[in-house]
Amino acid sequence: MDPSRYHTIVMFVLGIGVGLGASFSGLGGGFLMVPLLLYLGYTAQKAVGTSFLAILVISISALIAHNKFANVDYRAGLLLGAGGLVGAQVGAYLVQQVPTDQFRKIFAVILLALAAYIFFKK
Image (cartoon, rainbow, N blue to C red; front, side, top):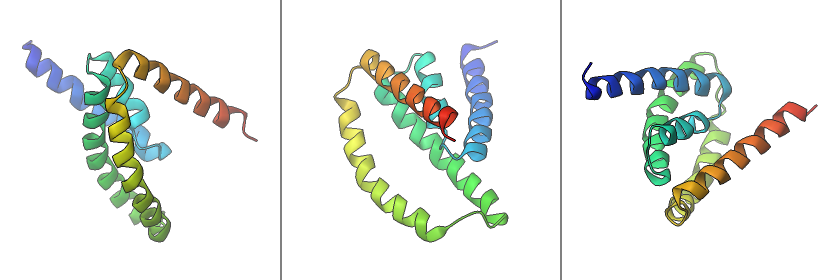
């Protein structure tokens, strides 16, 4: 199989998995997408940026689906989003300053801490 076609199929299938995980958990998909892109050889910066584009598409689809079930608090979502606009600009600058190897370690620690918090929370 042509490597380009294989890469396209892999990305599409991974997108299905991330969309399912993101819509089910509300974690946005980056926690799945970024490690997958790093595994595929992307730099940290390219993985994060590419992940955000995919998450935009996934989030719009998930918002439409969750809206059908009246599971959306628009006021809270817009307030969080407004704060997220500022944080996203700062985060994009900061990720430029971190080498990919160091980013992988930081990202892994964040994921482990989040997993431990969720697992042990009563």
